[in-house]
Each structure stands twice: as structure tokens, then as C-alpha cells.
Length: 106
Image (tube, rainbow, N blue to C red):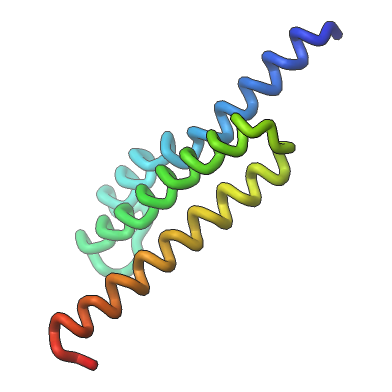
């Protein structure tokens, strides 16, 4: 196989892996809205799409940065998944502590 074919196949794989979580968001929304996937909260289950969407956007951004820096695929996946999850957890904790102070709970 020539070098150009390997490069374009690798680029296509990276593009798919970069956008896959973001592309599956409408599917998750459909499955939750039609009650094929239920977390026991009824329509309130759709709220779980917000952290998923934030995570997917952060994942795509971090993965694209790793791709531009030409990191190996395995390392890019780890950085993107772990970095996006860490940022979402920190944002959630920040909102939790902010709301506790705002509501006078602590």
C-alpha cells in the first residue's frame, strides 16, 4: 500500500473518532425521549444530555488539538476522553459549590 493511502485512511479514522461522540448525541436524545433508554426520571432524563453534549464538544476540541500536535492515536484518545471528563467534573463541582453559596446551604 502506498504512503498516501495509509495517511488518508488514518486521517479518516481520526476524523471519525473525533466527531463520533458529538454525532451520537441526537441518537441518545431520541432514545431517551422515546423511552427506549430510561433512567427513571421520565422527561427529566433529557437533562442528562447536557453534560454529555458538553463532554462531546470538549472531547472533539481536545482531540483536534492532539491531532494537530501529531500525537499518537492512543494518547490522543486518552487525553481527549480524560481531559473532557475532568473538565466536566470540575465544572459540575464548581456549579455545585457556587449554588450552595448562592442558596445559603454552606
